[in-house]
Image (tube, rainbow, N blue to C red; front, side):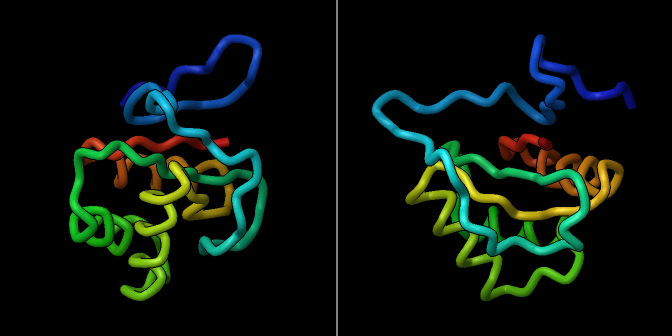
Length: 113
């Protein structure tokens, strides 16, 4: 496994696919914290891509995020769909990298900050 690329000038690791806002969609500047994790250092954001069903997103969240519940996964999937992105996990850089890697297995668009 190669380390995730660093976006020039940002120090931000991007996993899975390049993150781009779909035309006509505004990505919120602040994301309410309804994710899981210990709150340490890094965060995993999941972006809307219009190419996965709610059940696919929910299933992958349940697989990737420690302690994720079906109701919370559904709420996060809805937030991603309606707001363009959601914070789905907080934790150490290595924990976030693992969560992002599992989410990205099915082509979901994620970013670790």
